[in-house]
Amino acid sequence: MIIGAVLLTLTGLTPQAAAAARARYTAIPIVRPVPPPDADFATFQQTLAEAAARKDAAAVSALVTAQGFFWEREVGTLPPAADTPGSSLLQEALALNDQASHGWAALARFAADPAPAPAPGRAGVVCTPAYPVFNEPALRAAMIATGSDVYDWAYPATDTVPVLSRPHADAKPVATPGAALVHVLAWDRHGFAEVALPDGRIGYIATAQVTALISDQLCYIKTDAGWRIGGYIGGGETP
Image (cartoon, rainbow, N blue to C red; front, side, top):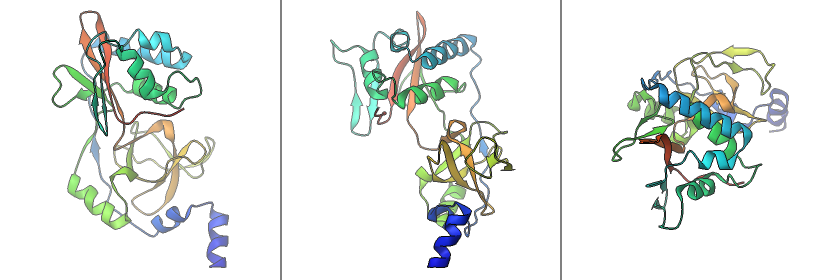
């Protein structure tokens, strides 16, 4: 036990990583969503990204639809009350009243995603991040092999995102997963996600460059005034 503890300390691996290093799984390719052929949406996303970068709650509020905003939470959908604007619900969902809230980083990630997908049961509504297409039986087999569940899987933002040897921007790349799922062992290792590759190697991806397979979504709808934020799906953020 003492030797094992020393090895973990020397390698810097978490106990989960050490266990995962002994596990192997078959690589699971994904097909990424395709951005819509709508230049207006790209322009809207750029405006939203700029507001998120400035942490400008008023500018974000101006991008929320005036009517019909919804918040789909684990406990059910929360439509706005007659006297509650959708912008207030969005601010609550992402805790945008706090400049230090993680919600600002989440909003920036939503704004950087160019490929929304239609929201089931909501005509004209699209949401990001859109889930990639992959072989579900293959993921089930990988979860059994690694003792994980669906919340432990993610995919890189682009095909060129590297897996690094250490949780540091200057670390040496050890692999490039490409268009494939990765097994996440820990979500926050100094701003990096600790991941296990199919061959059992352990590495790190910057959290801004990897998206959880199951995650909150920001939704949009095109109105007479242009694209607007139309809803939020998920539990939201806390300051």
